[in-house]
Image 1 (cartoon, one colour):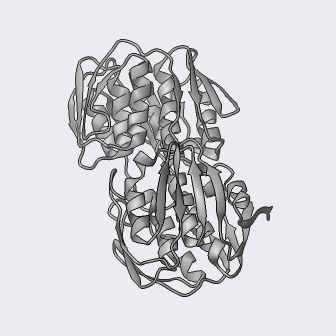
Image 2: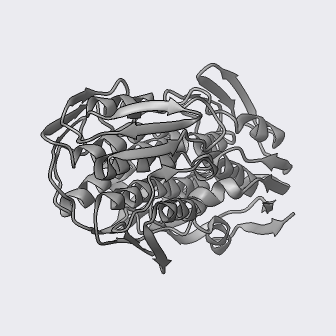
Length: 417
């Protein structure tokens, strides 16, 4: 099992290129099931999750090839409708094959999902939405058994703007008879990216990026050739790294329009942010200011940036607060940050972060993708050696992160224990 050894403190300077977004890529890979013929995805990151989804699709009979950030998918010869437990348990996004299999094949058998080990994240909104479209669904021995002779349009009101539920309902609705309306839909850029790919392939969709999406079902979806958007969370992570280390980083190949809430909080901490044609530059203040952060659904501050922001605020001047509205149990990184010397108190959904003068290196253990990146940020400024264990989590969501950090001045290396 690999670990990272980090020696700090470091001051990061230079430029970094942002990879394609994992959270946009995975729905697009699943959407290839809706088509017959070769789909091409560009700007695909080489991640553990890319490999897991590829293996899952191959198990269904999809021909998958990955080369030089391009992914080729041909679902013309699907042989199975089962997504097994051994793959789905490692990646919650495996649930995205459920809707395309029902819509295209009329049947799906998908294991209940696993993924990061924090908090309850039920899939009831996915299932209720698919049932509203006419799918018959049963839970049998840990598997979702779903079938439908033909899906039909419906009006679906989500109780919360779930990205996953919006993705599955959207993919099912494009091949359903009639019109489907998703109210309180997720507005994330990753939803827009999926909708644009499907529209390129013949789907009729309106309202993506807003809370109301209208889909008019069509008979078939053509193969798509599409580019995955840049990863706004990776961009935010490197932006936070610039601030916490007192450095200056040019972040390239990204979409600043997707990051206004992150910019607002980094600016509140005193950072200078300068936009450019295809990215932005972040320069740290002399002293990090404390601030208040509340996570929420897009365009609010992303829950996937909460852990990284907490690491940054550990060195702020004064007391900060973080309120986690999306996943109230997403604080598994707090005990590990405390091992480095952080002063953090948790009360339900609220974390109170008292800024400290310095952090000290220590062994820490990653529990999920974003907690991993938060521990790396803390390790970059901690005095001495920090060893981050269980970095297979970060390999799921960040492409060669240690190489990118080393190129801008970090003393970080990967070891095999």
